Image (tube, rainbow, N blue to C red):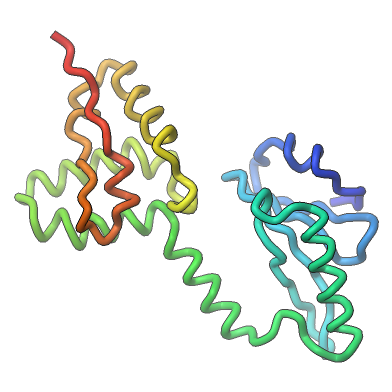
Length: 197
């Protein structure tokens, strides 16, 4: 996409695109913002080191502000000017990307079903729990970082389920367990829907 001066206001108001896009800043060469369809916004720096094109993630917006991301980009470009690759080891970078992928809601639900439901529930209960989680929650949040899902997000899904005339589906969503290895995924089902008479 065309270069433009990135601003906090423009980034904050940016709608989710249909496919991943990259917006480039006019102030710092190679500095930009990658925006995914899920709304994930990551500051990036694209540069060349030893003849190879490289890409460095500088932090996720809004956890890293635009001014801080620009400072990180400038620091990385200074390292590059001294002959140091700011991205470091590509294998370590790939391992970090895999670690981040493991925090997606979809992966957490898979682990919850495998490590809890299939071990401790009857087969039919495990199957129903997996179906409800996939239909009601994974369909909305598959690639979302599980650490960002709030109680309000969960309650909205459950309330929408009840509003659709399906209180039984909300009622049968699994309860959170303190011992669950994926407490956040089980927390995605932490509230019973009101039972209609």
